[in-house]
Amino acid sequence: MIRAVVVDDDKDTVALFSEILSSNNIAVIGKGYNGQEAAFLYQKLKPDVVFLDIVMPVYDGIYGLTKIRGMNPDAIVIITTNQMTINAQIALNKLKPSAIIKEPIDVNEIIKTVNQLCLPSLDSVNEMKKTMVILAIKNTLLELGIEEYDKVLDLLQKEYGCKLDDCYENPENLKNILKKLFGNSYHDIINSLSENLKGISTQQSVKEFLENLSS
Image (cartoon, rainbow, N blue to C red; front, side, top):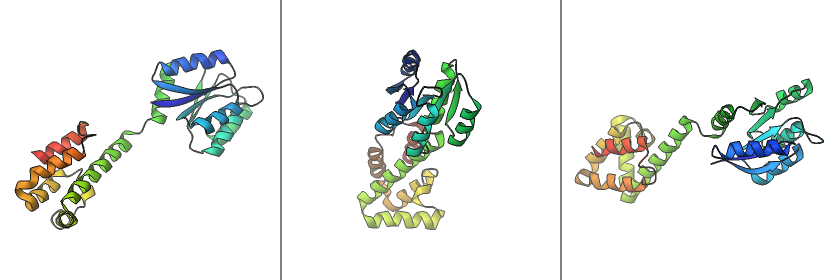
């Protein structure tokens, strides 16, 4: 679940905004009412995203964003505002907030923006799945012994010019090599691999990978 901090000098706005986020499966883990509190809450709670008003007395949003950027240049900070002075705009151009949302608040825009900024991209999710699958293959082969593991790597290179890391996209290559080397023990190896992938085996791309090996 995405974890958020909400900062605005208007307590009613903080309460309403927090309710909107919570009802959309975004956990509000901190509430603040000036820029100084924004910086403190970010340092203490390490949220995924900070919603920060610009115009606040004493310590404004520019102060808060400056401090947060000093702690983490890549922090996700969404500015909410119903007015923008030229000085504030100049400061924001330098501080580069992750997004600026104008009030009155559009709930759909907020949720869409948060998901775009905080959730991993499809490419990164797929890369993570690939990494987990390749690691499981390595572990499965190493359970057979380092000599057998090296034989698989050697044949993959000689016959297909590929590495183990390429087998996620080319399961047929791995299947052919394993069948060639291990014959009747092949399905036992695939069962062991399936067990090593049990945590993610129901995900579609991983399921298809295992099905290709099992066919």
